[in-house]
Image (cartoon, rainbow, N blue to C red; front, side, top):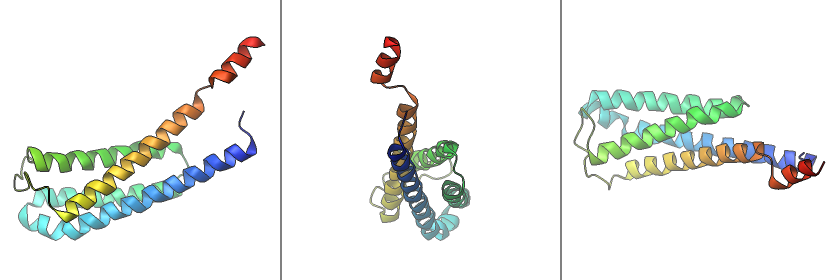
Length: 148
């Protein structure tokens, strides 16, 4: 059973992770806002996808701050993974309506988006792993229960 100090540290770590992920999601939104005009001019479908990602990133950031449930991490992870996948597809095979970006790995805003999305996904993975390991009984606790 965790003591008060352990519980306090876990809650503090959770709050810091939520704040960091929320800030990074804000950065994802800003990067896509900066690129939005060009995308709408070149390919409206990709531009609309940018608008959807911007809205989803803002909503996810707000949810991380406002909703104390650990269930928020799953959708945040899906959002970050989806954005990463779309970026990688746009640079490798191209998207169904856009092949202009294939091979364009030198885009500064693209690299910024890739970095922030990867960091969000890393925080989500870490938080989900922490929850899983905290829920599993330790080998010591299992051994102590067996002795009783």
